[in-house]
Amino acid sequence: MPASDQVDTSKGIHRRTGRTFYVATKLLPERVREATYVLYAFFRIADEVVDRTDDPDPETQRRRLEAMRAAALGDLDPEDGAALTDDERAVLDAFRSLADRKGIDDREVEVFVDAMVQDIETARYPAFEDLGAYMRGSSVAVANMMMDAMEVSAEDREQARPHAEALAEAFQLTNFLRDVREDIRDYGRVYVPQETLERFGVEEADLAEANVTDGFVAAMRHELQRTERLYREGVAGIRLLPEDCQFGVLLAAVFYAEHHRLIRNRDYDVLTETPELGRLRRGYLLVRTWVHWRRHRDPEATFYAVSAVSPGGEGDGVETDGVTGHVA
Image (cartoon, rainbow, N blue to C red; front, side):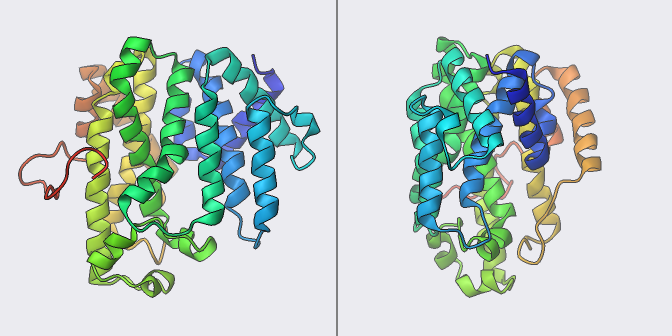
């Protein structure tokens, strides 16, 4: 079991850096809540190694990530990691304890850290399939570790896995679309696939100069629709999670998807300002989601009653040409 001070450190990192997901995490049962604080903090400290605006040295970043990998896998005592801060040591020690207790597969740790290393080396993705390969580590691994934390049964896990993967990808794609401005301005990265930008005639200079062209609006609309197909697939699997975890995951889905409403309300302009989900809006969504959940106890019915994502079907404007599967 992670020590209480280590959990407190992890919780503080979660509360400070992931306000939207933190609210949803508080609605998880206690047996999962503390594990989620530790997992989120682990993901965050690794992410912060590469998400820096002070022109960091790539070799130093790699050394820090490799130290984190070794500590997370139990191959290095965090106290021996000279490149690590006190908070990082506490989080990594807590993570290793959690991983041993919950049976987290070392492979998931490996592919997650590999994705963080990729952020040092790769700043553009030619096609969505290339971005999907990156998300295997940066988001799907996260979903798999969360299922371990929730102790999803083997039978349900087999059915839940593709849905959990889709929902994790949807969350990350929402972040990418919300953060186009920040990613190119602060980190020199573009996560919108190059094939999408080319298809709609968007120049990279448009992104850098915050030039919201008709082509950029069309590209954003296209990527939002792709992401919403993933939400539909992902939310369909929430019923397969332990009953006491379903509302917390559902609320996280509602919160993340709400950014799509914010983006559309801004006529898809995420270049001059980054849309943010405020505290009052989160509170409103929490209450609405709870009311519908109490009425239906059905994750899909509640999600479509409250969220910014429609259930789909004819006339919803979703592009379906050439689309098969959740990696479309």
